[in-house]
Length: 427
Image (cartoon, rainbow, N blue to C red):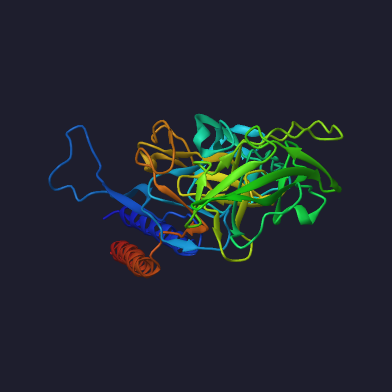
């Protein structure tokens, strides 16, 4: 029995100890995948082949294979922490400016760098699919990846083009005796205001005046006057036509239900911004009173809304389970800024280990397959969570004991061979 056979056993056992120790050391490393040593026996060959009585020449380490099974998800309070539940890797560029130097990881500890790029702890940039617009409905350019820069975004303003007001007008009110005058409260029964926005995000006040009109046995009319003003000069009001008339007419039946207009909606005439600021005229195409009533209760505003937005600043980031990244703004608006690009390989075990819980493409891995979360065998993305190491600590401690015994047994083999050699030398 040559010393080399036992020595090969020692080397193999040392490798197994090192692999097991590395697994144990990384039991708390996010996205880490445990490894295992794979061994193969060794036989000496000759021109005549291997004899059936050849004892063998020891053992060698055939491979150190990584096990890519799913790790447990650990939930955090950080929306930028991402985990993949299922197949796939996050696609990383070496830096936001080195987008052709790629690596792949399951560790989703991301943050914003000083320039607003989404990066991991070593500065590698998360790659996303570029958005075709500002909403999910606009879609994404799948196949075109880029780093995502977020903190430079501003919530763009949105001009108001519709408003909704649900009121109750008091059935006991009497019709004013004099012609309507917005500056004379005796000429109208009630009023309310809503803030609307122009195309540059500047606020304007839309005031609605309600004047009780004539009644019949079954219906009552109310005249609605609409005025627009600048909040800096609220008394300088501009009247708006409602459906082409100076006042719109709301008709209620004997049960207090709104019956006219049929859809409860008027189109208002455009309001030109004065003085000129570069903003487009405000055109409210839908002034909706659906749900309004006339009962014997005081005037009340039960609901009020409009669809315009002022300019806003970035207040947060959300990522859904399909990987769509949304920027949230202080004006209540949101914008899609990208969709996380996932990558998988025909043979994940063939990937090159790069350290920092990342891998690179290699000859044995096959070509990368790009895709989106939740489709084509790619897993879903969980925001506010991290994938823990898939190391089972108890199992690794058992493996450590077995590896230690393996090492000691091979060491004892060398000791025995040494004793045999000493006996031979003493003859």
